[in-house]
Image (tube, rainbow, N blue to C red; front, side, top):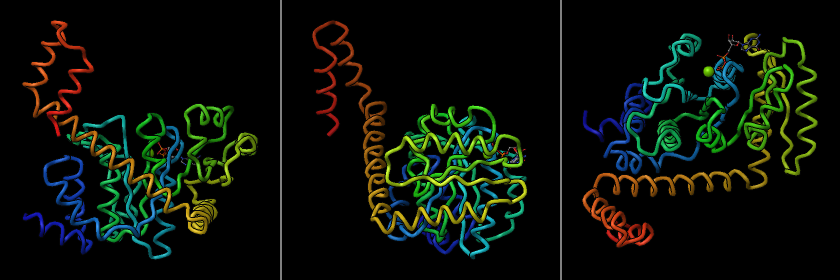
Length: 310
Ligand SMILES: Nc1nc2c(ncn2[C@@H]2O[C@H](COP(=O)(O)OP(=O)(O)O)[C@@H](O)[C@H]2O)c(=O)[nH]1
Ligand SMILES: [Mg+2]
């Protein structure tokens, strides 16, 4: 299919076309620039919700509930699930697929497990680009689920408009959350599996940790039982409250601006890396010889390489 045609179909909301554009993003191919150029004027209205936490915390179950909640308001929804444990598998998590099946036939819901099939910028660049595809193609809300274990995953979640950090009742889970660097990025805390013992204690632990924070926004703590749908309205209300707060304070603009700046920097870094690794192999080898023979130091070699790149 011709690329312009594909873009046109995706913009009109056609699901298969959206899926193909996201595959294109994952591949990181040469068409990416053209796709982004065509899509960009149509973006800016989708709201992104990041959801992170340890494996098994209930992120996917919560995501499904949030999708249901958004649909109750007749919003178009996208879901991007990022599974760092299988970056080359194509990323489809069977369990997630089965769970999400209640939304599978809803044309206003688009669900995708992300993978980076060759995108040099990795998942941290592929994800905002996939979000942009969904934004341009008319989704009002996009939920991005990541396992909050690696730096890249934390960064992706941090780059959302509202970040939910999911913990479970159980001794020390809040402490683990703090250690994983998730405390700072949480706009809302979700204590999921609130049907279990220790819920009150988990909430208390979180509250104590939050008291130490000097940030203006005090994250709300919401108790949920995702499997039963309990607390989902409260969670949705907490997200809307955070959104309203950011909009009133002009913080949403600032946050999105920081996100775009990070993206530009990553694109530049990726281009340079690609040039060094693919286009300037001969020069790089030559310079390596010079450094190895001690006629040149590594910094001088880098200067010459940079000069050749621009
Ligand atoms: N008891 C209980 N189990 C839950 C709850 N939410 C999710 N689970 C279960 O916890 C397991 C992991 O959930 P999942 O959503 O896949 O977690 P993820 O790895 O964070 O995406 C599944 O078996 C869920 O059915 C909850 O609120 N209470
Ligand atoms: Mg999951």
